[in-house]
Image (tube, rainbow, N blue to C red):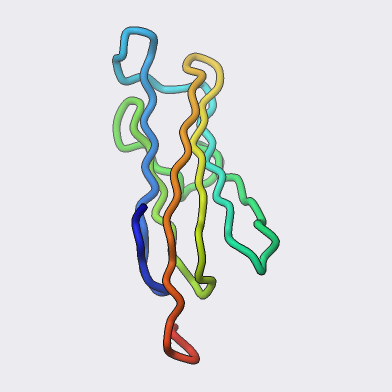
Length: 104
């Protein structure tokens, strides 16, 4: 699990392949980010082609640069595609608590 600090930008990457294991694009590509408590595990969804921060790097390769503001703890994110390619994958990263009263 990757560990980062408040104020970091972390690249969240997602890859998709067809049944022949060739890079391929889903019809719809979505990223969900779940933040740790005390935000009650709030989830936010981002869709490629709707949200400008979801970037297609190449066929089947997507990323989102997430700026860590001020909430330490364990984050989860899930990329999933539907339509032409139906796949999903989840990962986590951890944000360390800062010793500073105002880290940003």
